[in-house]
Length: 305
Image (cartoon, rainbow, N blue to C red; front, side):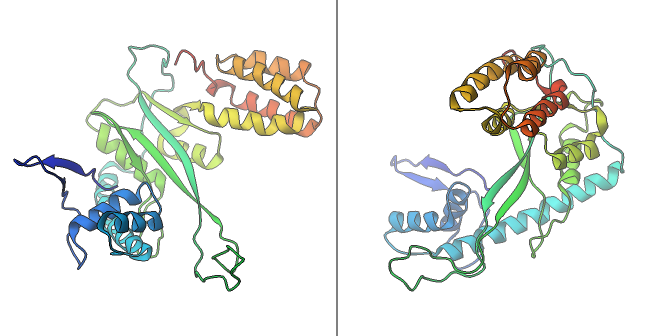
């Protein structure tokens, strides 16, 4: 979200942090605001506050103040991009974007547009924070247990070079101004509107229904989807823990299944599951079989891709 800071050298060969002029208002210096905003993408607000203190020798900003700086700038950026995307969508109507239903992903000469879609989950902050009265207790937060917060993120390959992270825009109440599907659609049009449609777009994602519905809303049923290896492995490990009779059996089954699925041999993996695995939990065994059957067209030869 915030531009990368760059170190420059002057004639005396002393380095300094170059400003990107994104944060200039308020009593906190723009250089300090940019430092906090940059590292808040990588660390917690509390860690950034400690970093500032170690760097300056003073407790210049609290974690709450740093959070306010970042939130205010995020809101400002959201509003700016929201207006741009609304204008793009207004010009292009409600039609779905045309993509090729078949893309030769194994052909090195085939130019693809990659799109990654997944949810990022973080622990939610409590509404109130209070020091524990008992010194023997390390618990700082009271009240109901903090719930996890999931934010869906899309990563789109840009027409020139690199990738862009895309999320829904928010208002002052934290509510989405546009749903993520509309935001992604606008971004694809902005990046590739001058090119000939349909596009060679390949979506790499997991099997979540919300993600599949979003892809359908933007591109229709023709979009090429690849089931990403991380989620495939995670699903196998979770279910096999309940299927295998013991740890040795689990390790043996996973070794075989991973080796076959890595090469896209889903049919061999299914044959093995159906005839070589003695299931401790038949429901989970059937669930794994259905999962592989459902996603068989999306399980590729990851070795060659």
